[in-house]
Length: 270
Length: 223
Image (cartoon, rainbow over all chains, first blue to last red; front, side, top):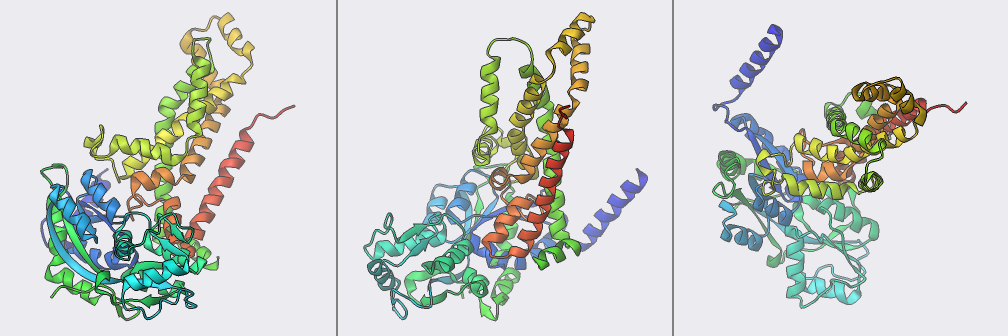
């Protein structure tokens, strides 16, 4: 028993020596986030430095923007990191969120087989590319999960004046981005992806970027703390600390430095 | 395939951590299912009370429910916006164990009941004629049916170790917290990283074999 106590004490002391600030009362922060921040490897790259300097422990539930916001709405997480501005604004307007800040951005890209049967390569706008896909009836894999990427894709179909749901060539997968890239690869199909997940999956896929650069495909990420007035048991101090880290100098420097195979994944607001 | 063996043989801490966590969750959820499951099975397995056969059918039906349905049901209970939300079980190890116990309970009850039904009816009559009281009779029945109890434990354990729906929905597949063998396999396969998925699959295969060999060894032999 004495040895056990001594062991725990020495562990606690070591932990205390490593932590720069006093240990937080509730060290557990639950972060619900889009699959792209997790599958791109960004969180695994950034969070250890946050955890080491603050003593918090971040538990990541990676599900997609729509599902993340729902989890926040129900009070089952403390903070969300998502990318669908309209959904985020609705979340804030309904007072589910306490604070919202911009974190970073990148862009969406249209992926497809090298053979490019719908001949979308080189199209200037996403709307043109989507119209070509529809008229060729080429297989398109949609996330179909109300994620940020899915929302952007549906907005693009709408902007093109098309309703693809129910067409035989339009397949709604209901899965995360990397699963959908793998599916599109197997089916020689087209899909819309965020750039970060694509960079992480590139060497496992034979697809290539066929259309990019349309301002419509801008992809901004925001962080929102869950409103403690609605869910008093949520870890609001922890959520604030994570928000300050992600949008502060240390976190922003890590985001700017994060590269996959030499390519920048996320960009900072100037 | 080779990488999978390297991960296991090399003692990769995260892989073995996931294996340990899975077994821990399964152990506790099986124990929590046994506590109400065995008495329920005993009650269902004997006596001539009204509605017994209907209840047996209900328990058997629950045993066939998909794990995601159990997960959904428990989700609505333990989400912060649900009746047990104040416990903060959602996306925690305790939440997974709670959900898995729900999954295992009908299995324990049903296997116990089914095994008792196979006991020689003269056994009970003998106990009564020998003048054993109700507690004495219960104790003697448990001893006589110990193979049945072990079968219930082993079956329940096998089921919770191999399920993915409850763990994914209630645990959220959080690294170092609620990531189990099955959710890790789903994640790795989704990312196209098959090495660890295969190594965990091998461990699950060994567990499934162990469970079934144990059951086989316990099965009463016909002479």
